[in-house]
Image (cartoon, rainbow, N blue to C red; front, top):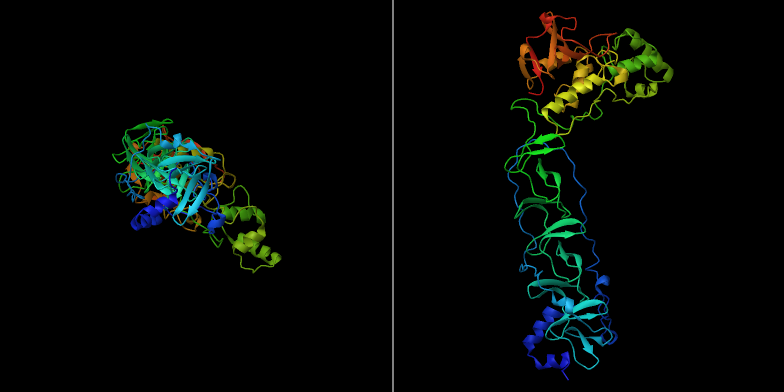
Amino acid sequence: MAPTPTLARRAHTRALTAALTLALIALPAQARADAGDEAAPQSAAESSAAAQSAPQAAPPASPSPEATDAPEPAAPSASGEDREAPASSETDEPATMDAADETGRGAWMRDSAGWWWRRADGTYPASQWVRIGGSRYYFYDSGYMATGWFRDGADWFFLAPSGALVGGWLKDGGSWYYLDPDTGVMRTGLTGVGGTWYYLGSSGAMRTGWERLADGWHFFASNGAQMGGWVRDGGEWYYLDPNTGVMRTAPLDLNGRHYEFDASGAWRGYEAPAGYLQPTDHITGLGDATNTLTWGMNGTKVRIAQVRLGLWHSNKLASVDAPFVAAVKNFQQRAGLPVTGVVDKATWDAMDTGYPWTVDQYQATPLPLTATRSERIEAMIGYAWNQTGSSYTWGGAGPYDLGFDCSGLVLQSLYTAGLDPQPINVVKHAWPSYRTSQELYAYPWFQHVPLAQRQRGDLIFYTTSGTVTHVAIYLGDDMVVHTDWMGRPARMQHITVGYGWDRMTPDVVRPLP
């Protein structure tokens, strides 16, 4: 009969005893400290190490690329590489699969050095895998149960504090690892789990960010999931093959659009030439910025207040004048407000107009950054065209039911195309004596070309006594879309629009060069 682990331990030197004590002692979770009332090791399902939640697949990304410069994606520094990094032996079946089932054939024992399994005949398993109660355990040549990271041949395994072999996702030392659910073998390299691909470094630790594999660059989300489609990183957009995850550098035709990429994989879509206004996918936020209606103020909010006060009619300019101030004072007196003749937010709220205080802000939504130059031009024209039939409002910039003036229509159309010509904006547009058409013509980040070279999407400017007073959007074939005065709604018209060729500026503005 083979000696028990206790007798074997007594026969060894003190050095061996010390080594075993330091390397092998691992009390199972829930085990009692009292050796006389010992608890058997738990199963893997009961182990706290195996109970941690695994990484989840990232939601699909469908952003719109942005045109900016970027260096080559840099591979991140390795993490969790403090252990020896073996390659998984996936060709040979691990010994864990051949573990003999000794359930009911012995009992768990423990002494000061650790746990061991005593068979009915007094022998014990050593240097082998054993299946007990549905879980697999490994016993060293001393007979003591192994815990933690364990290497058997070329393969790494993880044994819970209970000794039970762990399978699936494991978080250890701040890193995630994936252990084959059937064999317990720690996986490395590109690994599919539940329909999602992850990259596990040579140490087994799950990697995130850029990784250069044999077939090219891949990107792994913060949860480890391999990404496909558009991915934004470091201010740049990259396209990853949805099937393979490989970053694209060659030209791509996708959904009727053409994309170019530089050597680093960064998307190179439409960019205005240096020195001109670049497209954006968001318009500068104005927050609560809006107009208090004081003397001379124009625009949409004035029209709304005029309607509320019974002053509005089809040929009425949307301007704060003497009748407007008098009507506001009467309203404020009736409402118990300070009688100022000025429509501030308190007066506006009391009027209960049905419109928000910031109704005079942006109405249009810019295109995503994937948009080509042609798409931006058509979006700009399309927005203006959709406003045809809307009434004229001095200083107005929409919405449709509240009307536009010439430059208000152009501003909202530019926003739709992804152009944000700050400091020109729709709030300043309604200021007394602020001439937006003049500001647009003089804007230093718009390209100017001779009138004879006009193209679809250009802005045509008209003058009165040499001063810019009107702007329209050029459609081609000497037609424009615009709105120009009371009683004349937004419409398509010949380029002369009643002004004549002699009143056009000698050059046109090309907002998208």
